[in-house]
Length: 166
Image 1: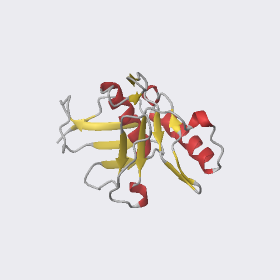
Image 2: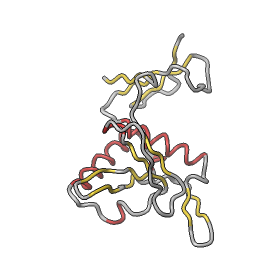
Image 3: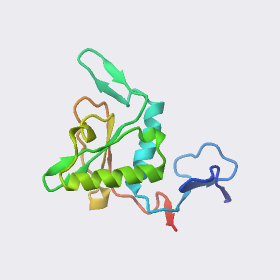
């Protein structure tokens, strides 16, 4: 099977079968990462794009209505000594993977030091909980108050995709 890279100039290229526009589930793909990006960075970016396609999931409950958002502010669960906190990568849909990685690193460091300001963890339109890196196979995620959805993530399996770093 031949592969092509439909986008050029990104930190990550997803190689898909030549001549395709849609990739069916189960189709082999190859992701080439040119920088130290985490799986969580990809989850943030993927969910931010999906949320703009499904605005019902990118919403918050109000007293008598549902408020839909046109930017994806992604909260990511971070374990600290005092418990879980969900710092927010604001407008993740407008950021590249490198910026998401930089923002998430800074937010995680501030969370670990107990220095997050309330506006950095209150709000958000969607939450990602990635416990796969801790070896947890399955869990039930909590949907934070006001939000419509959450994405719990378990461990990656080797046969899901190939990740090559340079």
